Amino acid sequence: MGKNIYVGNLSYSSTDEDLRAAFEQYGEVLSARVITDRDTGRSRGFGFVEMDEGAADEAIQAMNGSELQGRALRVNEARPRQPRPPRNW
Image (cartoon, rainbow, N blue to C red; front, side, top):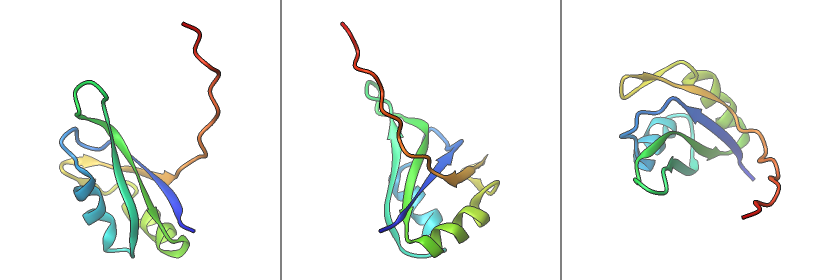
């Protein structure tokens, strides 16, 4: 099982492929996903990369603060998603 990595401060033009290419130099990328706005399809400025444990730790150390497409990235281990209460319409 892999470790999930949060990548923040992405360029709004970043794609899944850009994210994958940036992290592949540290090991096998199991998945790379830029989160997009539902209405516009444009990047929301963050994404997630899944890698195996050892490679993920190395990638977090190396990529945090590094530059991708002119923006300094914020990279850390992703926190588990918190359950949200149901929306009452």
